[in-house]
Length: 98
Image 1 (cartoon, rainbow, N blue to C red):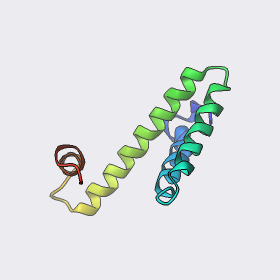
Image 2: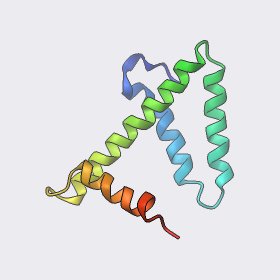
Image 3: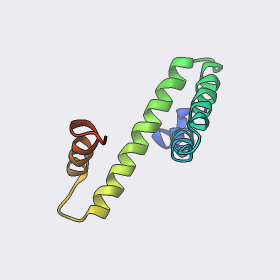
Image 4: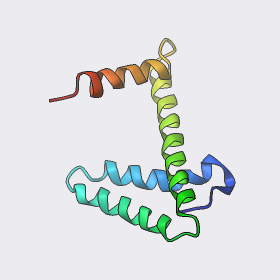
């Protein structure tokens, strides 16, 4: 796991790696879990494991923010990130797919 010295952007490579493993694991969910376990083991092996976990969470949060901005931009000028979040909540939380 990289050092956060460069701010949230420094955390993005690990977050992108984890989320890429998620998107590539449709046929093999074990691939995602193996990637997460490797990232967690790398972080646990650092001198400050809590900081490594915080960096992973910050990286995932930053990546989510970037993705929301892109989705809102593609949805059109009348929709913003809050609208996209509301649609995601309706689709996956309030009325989850069967």
